Length: 140
Image (cartoon, rainbow, N blue to C red; front, side):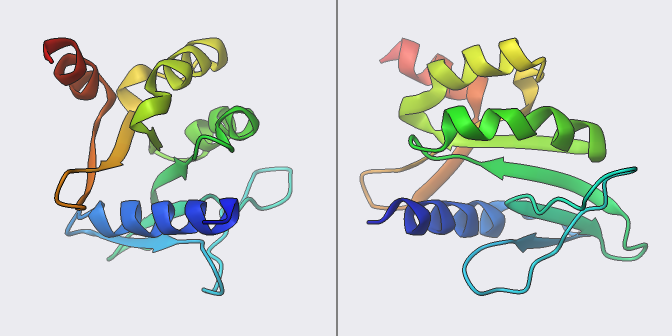
């Protein structure tokens, strides 16, 4: 799978998993219309996933979805995304958890924002909090 396609599939799957009843969640992938977020005094940004409150239209959350090939390059945007939105989530492949943890610490991103994604043995797309994945891996 091409790197861009791998990223788009992961972002679409993560967006599908973000089920908050009062949010409208949009993944900026493929040919879908883009939902940008204004940056005060700068150019608009287009995060991988944006969530808006259904009734007010206000920005509720931003999520960055990284793959093994985009992890290091993507880190430069995380702090901005965290500052722009009330909630920021960072999704990384499970095998990149340790590197993502180091990058979060280096860029001042709270580890509570960190999530992992993977496919289980039944080929289901799973997301979980980073700390929970670390506990699960340590127990096995």
